[in-house]
Image 1: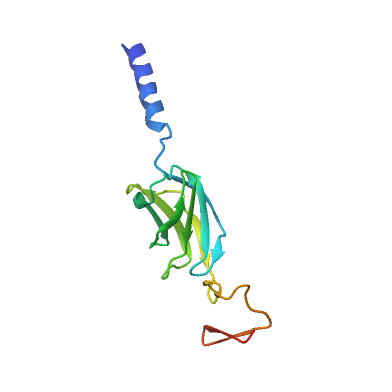
Image 2: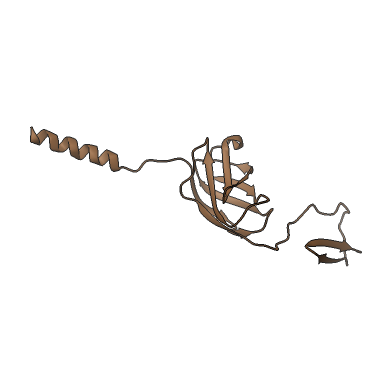
Length: 137
């Protein structure tokens, strides 16, 4: 009897300790530093292609994916984000191996280009109280 019980116990322990896939896998983000509005590329696996079931969190602040594939997500750093972990969840399944993002304060966010083809030359720009101004050219 004990010769039959040992293989059964060994098999149970083996399957109980085996590694299970627990959802999407976030392996890297680029760039790892930036300001509000920065476009970030998340690399990993198991994201799927349906953006409506994917949750990207910047230290708890929700960001909506811009583009998505099973291995890549592009997302814009949302207002209210802070430095900390970036995580991805799919269908409510949270991600366990998060990546760290550092929010840089005082960074400029690029807005739309001026609608004057071919652009402006010899213009001046300056900032007062955190607002940018563009004159001349």
